[in-house]
Length: 242
Image (cartoon, rainbow, N blue to C red; front, side):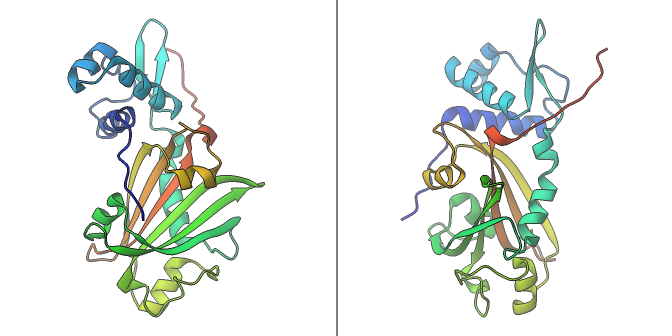
């Protein structure tokens, strides 16, 4: 049985601050509210606020400047590249990709995926999970979810790798057409199985890119949760000193 575990308070706070950075509430180059202000605004303890800020610094959203406070950076490179991650999740040829298919199973849909697919809680979906590896190291875990009715007359439920991409397979077998993709980026702690596959120690978060692929009507056909280990994302930033 699959369980949906709510992230810890500091992760939820980090996600809220991240959303405010993305929507322009905290623009690049400005200071985020002080620890005291965040404690008062969100009603959370100082240790929770400190852990949230440290998580955002580690993921490249914030930086500390001596004598000036905590500053919002430009969007991290890993986030700027999310479109590439999403396209790869849809167009990856499993038979040619560097990595391995680690699981194909009918599962209870995770809550974050259910809302994207428009499915009720506890609905069953097909999951294909692919571990991307580079030089023997796990660098990305892609869990793709498909509504049960969509996988009929396809090879998606097979434990064998597909020749060609899932997108090509679905468009050929089901006569459907992928039209557009929506992506949601967040930070969270991995579930035990995800951490094991990625080889992550306890407490190391992941950057999650939720890729929602839809047809022209807006109906979601596939949702892929692309997990990137936060301790293996190399971010680089160059800027002028005024």
